[in-house]
Length: 207
Ligand SMILES: Nc1ncnc2c1ncn2[C@@H]1O[C@H](COP(=O)(O)OP(=O)(O)O)[C@@H](O)[C@H]1O
Ligand SMILES: [Mg+2]
Image 1 (cartoon, protein in one colour):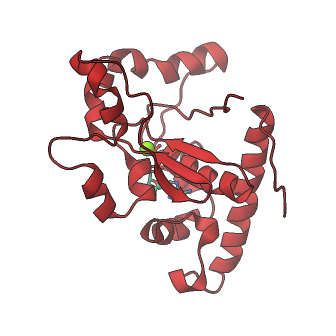
Image 2 (cartoon, rainbow, N blue to C red):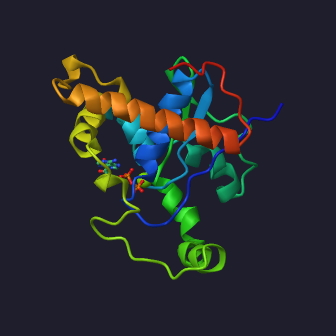
């Protein structure tokens, strides 16, 4: 059976894509689904969200990056061979593995930059039938402005955990407990709906 793939893409930065993928990965794992998170963004923020700085240094030394996504396609770029058949994956949790991102990916991807830049505009006009809106602070498209997540996000980043795994020991005390509970509900609802649309079965649909 081939594994379903969910891709998250847009070329506007800072709207919460990486945070969303990080949280959904954990939510799907909590729901009993095995997740391979693939960080294809040259900024590699998803990799940085999952891994401690020390480990990042191990994967991104000067020179060889054989265990990253860039390392997997490098033979093709150099013309010395095909892409690596079985790329390295880092185990994050019982049900989460990560394909390590790489800033080096900025090189081959640059060739597509002009083309990719057109996508949100074309999508907005052709599919949604509206002129694209510019983002800016407070835009409804920005997750950063959603409810109380703003106060929990730095804590979650520090702990390399999703918001809904935060505990009092992480500093999440008092009314933040309710916010964590809400976040769990929100992400669960979103994860279940995305899975439904992608025809992915959820093994542990617990509350
Ligand atoms: N719901 C949220 N509440 C508060 N801050 C958020 C939220 N989602 C993302 N952020 C913060 O906004 C910034 C950009 O988010 P990120 O997920 O990296 O966006 P993108 O991947 O689209 O560039 C990060 O600093 C992140 O911590
Ligand atoms: Mg990002």
